[in-house]
Image (cartoon, rainbow, N blue to C red; front, side, top):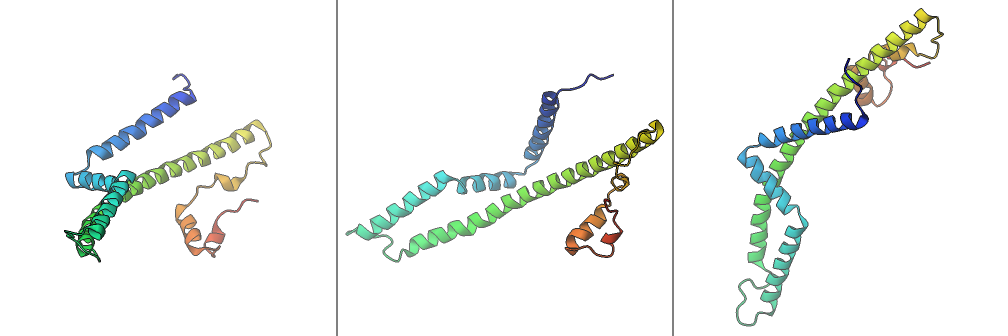
Amino acid sequence: MKPAQTIEELTRRNVETIARMEKASEVGRTIGERVADLVAATVGSWPFIIVQSVILIVWVTLNLVGWVYQWDPYPFILLNLALSFQAAYASPIIMMSQNRQSRLDERRNKLELQINLLAEQENTEMLRLLRLLCEKAGVPAADLDQALEQPVQPERVVEQIEGGTCTSRAAELPTHS
């Protein structure tokens, strides 16, 4: 028989499993995904915002007070063009990074749903077995709600959520009494 594990050992194992999954998703990235993630991380950082703000302030100041040579006089058309180019390239690259992250999140959500459904099935079976044990031992099991022993039907739960109210099909779901 396998010795009982401590919470610390179970937690460590779970953390290691998650770390392996994260590493596997990082290793599988294409060069384009790596570049998009790097650009998104850089553009979405405080150092970038601060450096860009300093450059903009210097640009505007030099062109406003420059008496001899103003390479971009007010209304700063060249600056506007440069910022437009930056936005035109940064936006789609950031969107690519967000789309990749969204795919990872969707994958995690599906995995979590599968684990939750398995846990629900295990709990339902444990309640059924507990009721049988109680009946066999002659222990009153009135507190064990038979509705909890019935398997959850995810399709009906989705219908209930999407309907926003109890529909006639949702009324078929077992109720706790």
